[in-house]
Image: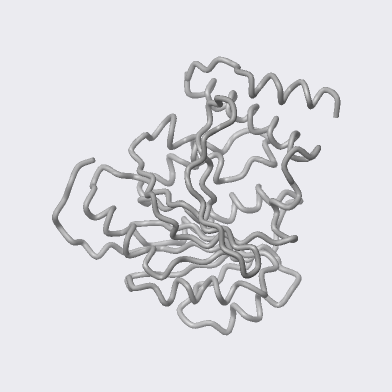
Length: 265
């Protein structure tokens, strides 16, 4: 990484996606407003929430709200489109993504911006989540895979930050095909590992990643039918991604097992 001793006070844009998070959206936004780092703008995209999210958001100062009334039936597609729209309206040099039911450690932005300021070549920074199960907190660390796969550990979207000048290339590289259950976090981690390569994974747990019965991941509990189908789509996305970028990848046990199981579902 290219080191720099210059302190630049980089402007940060925190892009928040919201859908029916009335219980959590205030905690989410307050975790940004209370950051030790202050040069921040907050933009929120609401995907036509049916709860009181909009009423809550409209009362907040220093929050730019975008109300999106046109949504698809696929949450992952809506999420990606919302982030694209927020990026276009942002003015910061560093982009932080945050889902409306998650929240940041109060020194997260300061720590990551300091890293960007000191490492000019770094384009994307990932941190690790703290899983929130009600009042229980589980600190995630890098896991070893049961059998070798070609995709890396997938950091949740709220654990991803990047320089704005890389965002357009990211979106151009990951937005293709009808992969309606392949989320932004998976796409970004694949792009970073195989295309960008100028990224860093901080060994710090800086993002509170909430797990509830209404969280989208609850629809994909491990080894259920929906989980295996989602996993197959992820493999298909990756091979399509590799073909488009002339990356040679051999199918491995992970792919073969996933395909075989899907035959019998």
